View (cartoon, rainbow, N blue to C red):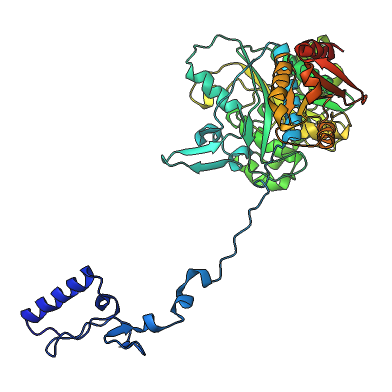
Length: 513
């Protein structure tokens, strides 16, 4: 204990001197300064240095020969590094080059058909406001959102479908878009749902929509485009059928049973679930809407009808639903697609915004889930506070169609790289010459891969065979001196000289062969 101000000053002075002059007193325990002062010790016990021949005290840490090994981080057991999980998140996919070639092939067909029918492509952010998808309680999509609160405290979600984004974009223009509009897109959509064959948690979806026209001419045009796609990729009406119904059917039936119109949409959402679950599992939800079991059973008995004639017997010939369906069927005859179309009163679609014709494309063998689906949604803008606008469209996923094409053995092979030629320098000194040859071929329109490192010809030919190119251009010393390269035909095995300044002509000749 410090007994006087003088002693305190002496202690502080000694402490500062030891610190500034790197004296070991601070580090290892200050030696006793005088009989009348207290000793300042480190928490480590001190002792005289053994065999040093010198005085003073040091910390045990200094004389402990094992201290380094005890404290060195290098001696500690290293934590086992967690190995990277190389799988993509569950329900998602990687697209390696071969997969990308298939995806590009599929998207090219989507785009080709859309443009053939006069549609313009658009896109929107994959991240949207969560409120865009929570219009109606009970819709399955509201429970499948990838949603979160962002750093700006906003409720956002990865889009589960594209139609609401399209509606937002139309509303954003405040009537500034000339109608009718015919737009298409191929967005990536996200839903956290149970995975089955052809169903993932992310997928790409071909969307085609027409806004501003209220007649069934729109739905017929859309289904004609869909059938055109099926035919382009090698499918027939024996492979794929398209079930068609109208929401007006269920509306008229519910109206005749005394169910108010404001409950029609919610009822359709629940009825759509009957294909997947028994009636008892949703009876409680139906009762909350005021629908007794008797009403539901009468409704489902009507929805099992598979002909317009049967519906006509229930609703009468003056029914708007019957008139709409008959007119639609006449148009499918005009498009020559009627063999693809069949009436099915059980098709109601699970989204609350549908208002008229609804449809689903399906595998006629029944092995796969729905291939595509859509319908009319005239009142969608109203759910966002806008004005009712005639609109119809469909969504067509990329996963199920690929499974179907594999099943029918009509999916092309995508092993080929799509390149035309490999260019190879026989030695490093000729690499600049190889670049010149490759550049000439590229300017002529060929897709050319240059071997970028020193390799043996045997390796080059194996590589060219693996990536399925048609030709290999060999740049060799003697030929190059003569202004030539040697070109090997990979299919025939022959090899022939071509003048360097004639490479463009050679490329044109190959392209026209």
